Length: 196
Length: 364
Image (cartoon, rainbow over all chains, first blue to last red; front, side):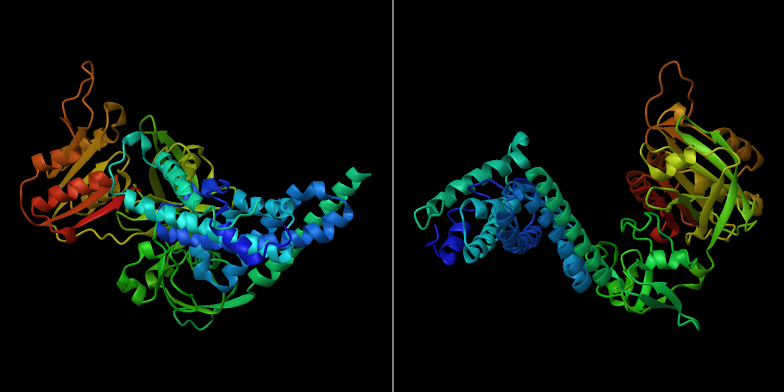
């Protein structure tokens, strides 16, 4: 794995191994917040930022603390704690320095703590044995990929507002179906690059 | 051994994270003491930064109207922030018109004090006081509506106009909150405030008020509201209420007949079933004394066969349409749920009552 460059991993994380469309992680906020493009952009940006930063911090904690101390089995709980604390910190920071961004993102930031894509990315980084540069590339790519998926979905859902969808399929069911179609479309990228 | 290590290191890590967060909070969220200047007063107030403008004003006994308790959902706490308020937030824009945004009107509950701030507040709002009162009686009007009579203690009297409301201080887990209720007792009883409260399941204010017993202490602020009764005796007053929207109307009618015994007034009140009727006998008694007072109660659901009901049935706007003849020279006050307000406003306008003479208290 070590020979794959960070750029390749970044592109792969966005297109071929999209964390949402191939691993189906982060589905709950994806379904709940994909009603409008504006909200989707806000949430996508927040996820990208938090995903990149937490992957970096968790990389450092894993390799500098957990591995030397032989406490690898604690990775789940430690990663979760770090993500929760980081989100809190970002919330305070954004509120202090950009109240407008805070109110645009503020509602989504606490949501991100429980977004499984964030924890998923940290765990993939460990399982796949990435080095630091690869981890950063993967974290950022996974974030951009997630944002891309939710923005595409929001665009589709805004169009679907004008479609005559049968009553039982309205809302979440049709969103799930469209997500599957979107995932299949993304399989078209599969031959480009691949990571495990 | 590995278990001990695991527990210790996890505890250490969480402590470290919590400490980091606390340091960050102290550094980032603290704004120190800021100056709050009201109407270019001689002595600006020193207030703790980081809190909302509304709570800073409340702490200094300036009671801006706010029906939702600072959640940003009622849009009542509008004041002029001349400087130091920061940009208008997305949570405020739904409640502010373009003109208001241009003239620096903000929602006091959404403005956070981060620096010295200069606000302008109308004199009338500065006169609003906090009252302490004792519950004199709590009586059932219907199965879910209670009449609560408060006797004022400190200050001993309240000077209000009919149609105005007070904000009851309701204890809650996160500190006291305020809920708005109209005054139903007439203005010539300045030492009393009566409320008509419908129990809303899960509602903070109504649950608290329904649980009161005589002798309990209740604190409230007021009076709020800018409705003014038309003082021209030739103008007919039309009152339309629905559900529990009776309180301001009762105040208006009794005050009206105390001042102008011969004045013309019509009351239309809509209930769902006979179980929901209240105050009908009192108003019928009043209409016997004053020949120009007319009362119409209507039931929106058809009464059962064994029930005795000779009055109207159907929604209340239909009764308004039926009894009111077209003509000007009227002032209307409506109180009830939004669909009722909308329907009655339409009927009144068809009857020639201009929009500027129609006032309403809308339940949300």
